[in-house]
Image 1 (cartoon, helix red, strand yellow):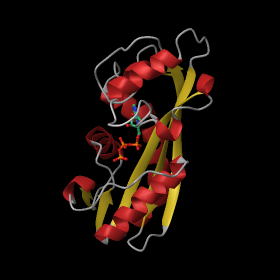
Image 2 (cartoon, rainbow, N blue to C red; image 1 turned 90 degrees about the vertical axis):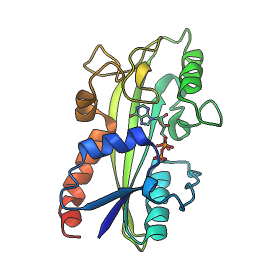
Image 3 (cartoon, rainbow, N blue to C red; image 1 turned 180 degrees about the vertical axis):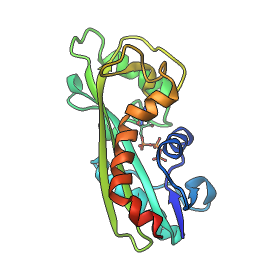
Length: 197
Ligand code: ITT
């Protein structure tokens, strides 16, 4: 039985594959199914969007599907950009414009505390879905630093570190990130089930 990772974000896919133990599974991604239309992420929660991505891809492919919906929540902005993290500065999505907007919104703001949140959803081919979540607390700095990772990584310093996610080695991010925590919860909850498919 195939498991499809329901994302067309190449950075995210790389991180998921580095973190999750897919041993014994025939794993593909949404890149292997170009005929499937992009899922419209119109839910107002991470759980809603992650579930929608997993269920639509599972039903369209007839396979099990695992989806990730993630975003950055900034306390001084009442949780924004949140579920709108990908298109914070409008469409087409641009990491550069999103980071520029975030810096602008936070200029002069003292409280820089924030967190990344990831919800991982798993759907069977009929669309029965479950979710787990991971959070990584940290703060937003006032300039871009580093070149690794993607999205808001150059502005985010995780709690307990001095460097941004974009300065830290990928192996460090993949140990402590929101995505790592959610995928570890997924492995604990569904590892046995997946290895029996
Ligand atoms: P898929 O829906 O195809 O998986 P996406 O990029 O649209 O890809 P999301 O809907 O989950 O993914 O949007 C998440 C956005 O949040 C993403 O575009 C980044 O701007 C940001 N983001 C998510 N995870 C991140 C991370 O680990 N580091 C930095 N930014 C991240």
